Length: 72
Image 1 (cartoon, rainbow, N blue to C red):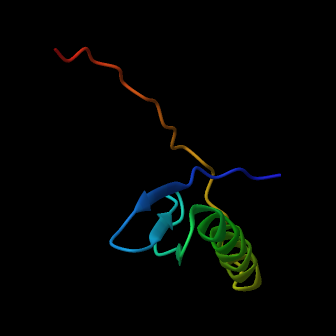
Image 2: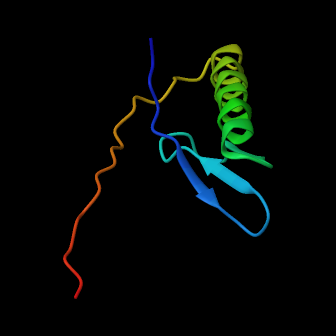
Image 3: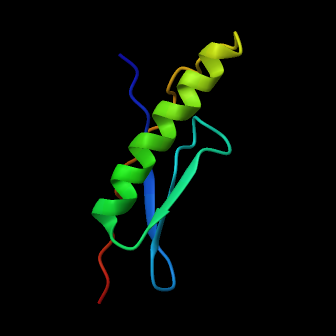
């Protein structure tokens, strides 16, 4: 099973998502939940397309971390 980091950003009136490990694999949606579903489908289609074309599926190497800073 492959796992890919997905970044979801709030845009003007909708949400957009991408995976740093899968260039050009993006999705949008009206809500965060819709965007998550759309990105799941986009990743599945992207990976199946790579496999059908005989190309390797990239290994996930991205990670995310929150950084906390104190503001006064």
